[in-house]
Image 1 (tube, rainbow, N blue to C red):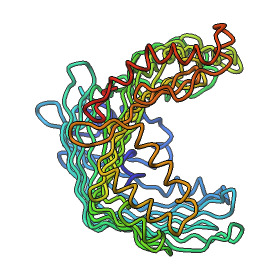
Image 2: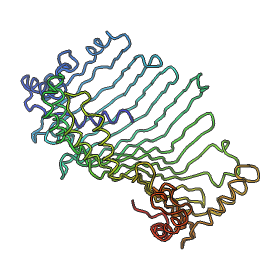
Image 3: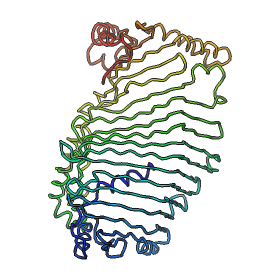
Image 4: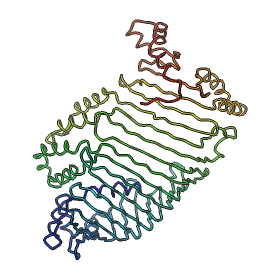
Length: 520
């Protein structure tokens, strides 16, 4: 479904305005409307045919002509069962769209490592929605299936994916800032995937099984520019010829600019209930496993976020020595991403500068200057508030990192720990039988000495690293600036250390006092 959903969503947002009269003339107009966006070749070969079906139109998809064309290429075979969609005009100018079919298909081709095969089936697949031409989107839609299977075969790996009943809904509204706002929700039962790897060259031969009784997908977006994107698609169809595209590149630039920022924000989450992974080394699992991502559109100060959250974790104990039991995580919440990302300036400069009559359309020098300009805006690597828990132990972290000099980072990271003594006790136990832990144990005691005790008893470390190479923890300088910096300033290491201790780093030490509470 991770592969299928983006395609389904793209189709949902890409349908053009439809004809309004249900007769043969209306069928011809609808054909012309769709050809405007997707080209005429599909109609000419019979891949898609539109006919009158009572008070609606039937869109019949028959893949045999496409299969016949691809059959001429011996290394590529493709087949999908025919299916129909029904579209009916409404009094309010919108359209009812529906489909009720079961799908089966396969794809075979030769890849770099040998023959590849993919087969899929979806039983009792139903769809019903209301499409609004003025928004170029479905204002509402629902879908369902009874079951789904997909098989892939490669020389060194094969996978079998299956799922039970599934449902999906999507709604769209006009966005106040242009484009549409949408929400999507999907739920699939009894998800399972079996992957078998057989790679003699690497000495790998084992199966991995993934399963979850429930998989849900939720997404929402703001300001998705559906109409300009459709206009851009129509332009591409009308200018397939290279010479014509070059002649009309001024219009291409105008349409590209009109599509910006593409969207304002899109966020999505995959959530697995009672997730389990079985492998030759044991069973991994989580009562709840969520994987989230989000991204701003093309803006001058964009953000991108990723998150992994798991509760009720289980890890094969045979992989770990007994003394690690108190340290094995049971819950994690990891968040990271980027901020202050200026894609707007890059996109607009690139659109303005490219010339399709040149090869390459953008010079190497321009590309280097564009990257340098992007770095000059000082984008950030962000660690959002993240935690790892195990019993009474909790480690929290957050911070941010920039690269003001281009290579060396300037970072501030706050770490606080509850139950640090229990970590020390576990390491002490491990030191009895593990030489590496015996060496790490004194280090753990030293680290505790740098920590600051918070009112709730947690230990906190505020770590500041500068692009000049200096490192400070809770305001105490551990390492002064690199010698290159000293040469520029004419000072020796000791004077640099004293200066750093009395300025920014001591201020950085005052950022703590309430746990990992940075707000990048």
